Image (cartoon, rainbow, N blue to C red; front, top):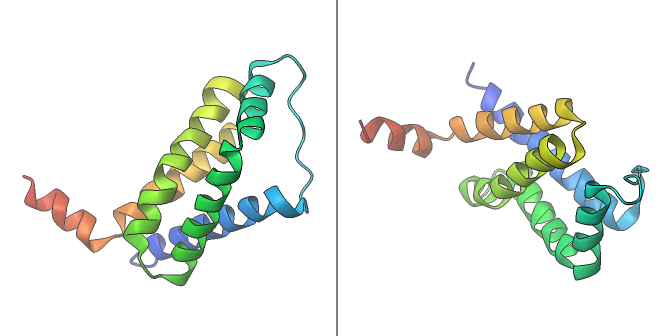
Length: 126
């Protein structure tokens, strides 16, 4: 049971490293959203502004830290908001990919819940 948060942390780290590297190396073909859709406008704005490149750097940094096991709290603080945006994009804008969104949300919550400092903070607040 104590290995579940560790496995979740590694899976989350692998997901973030792979998809951040895919942004630059294009080894996984990603389908483009249909032109004129809300998703196309959102992704287009992220690409054109350079915002997505910055997010992908943070994804890579957070993923590496999660895999290394060093500064895990910092890594979770970095990738947590990114995970929330990814889940909200899939649910509210894309209206598809619920499985990936659910997987990412569950992994992030499980990895966070495995942190001793997080659990102690929750217990101390009661």
